[in-house]
Image 1 (tube, one colour):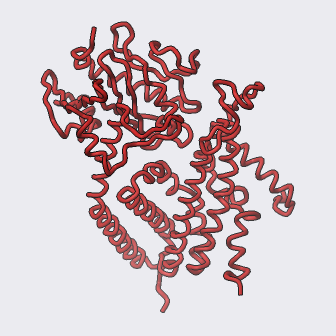
Image 2 (image 1 turned 180 degrees about the vertical axis):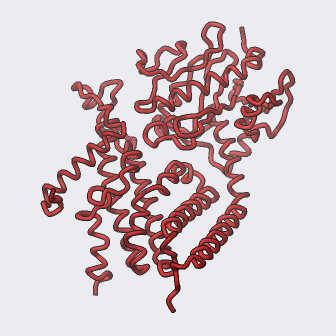
Image 3 (image 1 turned 90 degrees about the vertical axis):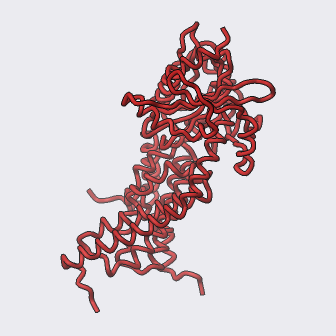
Length: 250
Length: 215
């Protein structure tokens, strides 16, 4: 039997059936896998926060990024992160699920002039306190985000960057260790101004020996992603300035 | 008896040489430019495309007698998009690390013209097994070019291969850099891929004059 695949009725029916079939497959898959995906994303956030404060399994070879394994991350997170704070205007409250706050939504609320929550994580490792702040911004193609760990002199103790869709080999290299490691020891202060850290091209200091110039060396071929990182850091720092002022040792 | 007949073998070997999707059919150029700055990214992309093209060709081939010709392009697009999303979701749930690596490639796979090109040119007219072989063959041909381009761009542009420094350290001037050699920053940016692909086409056509079109 030959189907009359050219008739209009057949075409419309085929399209309708196809949409329903594909739609139900995807809908079923999405709801079946959702709990697993959510769990993975939660672990990842914990891993990223711990990574920024130097709790990771990196070797000395400056090679790849190695997180705490997912099966122990929950316990490690609980033991290293002493406090999770939520800043709402002048009010600072403790919230053990602050790390689940979606910063993107909060930044949108700020734009709309609505009330917003800003999370801060206070970690402690070998008697030293780390203040870890989440960041969110935009790169060339899509969102970039990360965490920055500061001590009470506003010196960077570690950072973690990630991205949604930067170009592999170029902008995507913001999550490479050689880029992230450069931020360690830099200060976000310029005198008493909260200046952030710029990703600078034409830098006279490619080895990054000067730590108080508010600059790290840029990535080749990734100007716009680099600018995105600079903007993300300076905006975050501006946003958290009132809180940072209260913890800074003057 | 051989596992594959001679005709079937040709489905795999032709795209590797005289019917290469990139250098002869000029399909999939966009992704060849975009992601070949590193060898690792090239390889990941090649493997992803192999999976999607192999599976997609089979699905389209099975449906080839019931797809209305008026909307066949849309149907093909839906099949690719569905396959890619399924893979992406399953990886996110069970191999999260891997899915992070692949995330940026997902959009590039859906829009890769090799996939639509092979659906249209081959899978719509051939049986599932032959379509599967055609998919594997073409993605291998695509992958070979990607890896060659990635090799030269990463080596000349960054002095590394798979991220390992093979030429020494450009900042502390060890290895080859001690002699005054410098990385070529131009190789990092996409136009360099066009030039490398151009050279490959040149070499291929001078070795086989039958490929040169009459003007």
